[in-house]
Amino acid sequence: LRVDIAGTNYRLRFNSSGFEVTSQYFTVINTAASTLSLSEVDTVIAADQRLRKQPISLLVDRFNNPVTELVSGHRPQVTARLFTQGGLPTLPPLPPARGQAPGTICALNTPLLQGTTTVNMSMGLGVFTDLMIVHAMTGYIIEISYTPTQGQVFNVNSTSINVVAGRPADLCALTLPQRCSTNSPCLDPSEVVCTDVWGNVQRTCNLCRPGDSECDPLSIPTQFSNRCRPGQICVELDRAPPGAIITSSPGKVYLGNVPVPFAVIGTGQFGGALFDELIITATSPGT
Image (cartoon, rainbow, N blue to C red; front, side):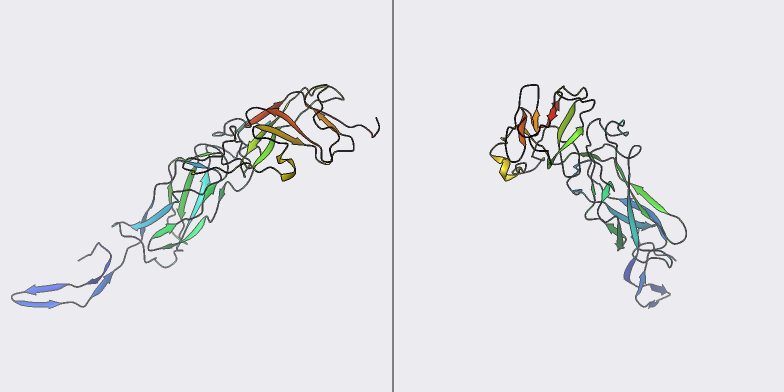
C-alpha cells in the first residue's frame, strides 16, 4: 500500500466477510525533493525599481507534493544568482558587454543583483521580496538553486529579463574632453548625460515611468534654480581657481564674476549635450 498525496488525518478501513476494522489517524509526508519550479518574473523592469513579480520557488517531491518536511541533512534555503549574456557591463571607451547597448552606462555598481538573495523555505516555498537589477542590459537570467548538504543540487532559471534606465537623478560625464590646449577647442569632445541613481544613462531625461500618476522634477540646487531653467544644461566649475571662466566657443563667456562659477552651456533636449568646443581657462586677478 502507498499513499501518494501528503496530508493529515488519513485512516485505513479494512473489510472482510462482514468484519471491519479502522486504523488510527495517520499523516503522510512528502518524500525526498525531486523538482524545483519557479514563478513568472518581470520581462522588463526599470533599474531603480524592485522586481514587481518577485521570484517564488516551489520544491516538490516526485509525487508533486510540496517538500514541507525536509530530509535530514537538507538546509531549508534557496539562493538567487544573476547571469548576463556574457560578462559584466563596461564603461567607455571599452566596448560594451553582450546585452549592453553602447553609451548606456556611465557609472558601475555591484553587485548587479541587489536585495536578499538567500531566503528560508516554508512549506516548500522560497519567497523573494526585494530583488532588483541595477544596470540597464538585456537578457538577464535569475537562477534559483536549492543545495542540500548531500546529494543532488536543484536549479531553475527565470525567463529573460530586460532592464531599462530608471528616473533621472544625476548628471554624468559619459566621456571627458581630451587633447586640449590653451585657448583652443578640445579635439575630443565631452558628452554629459542624465543618469538614474545607479549610473544608467537616461537619454530623454524622462521623469516618468510607465504607470506613474505624477512625475517629480529633477533636483537642482536652490542657489542655481533661478538660473538653470527647465530644458537647459547647467555646468558648475568645482573648486575653480580665482578668475576661472568657462566658454562653449571662443568669445562666449557664460560665467563672469559670480561667487560660485556657474554657466548654462546649452539648451534644447536635456537628455544629453555634446560639448565639442568646451574651453576652460584660468586667469590671475586683474588680468
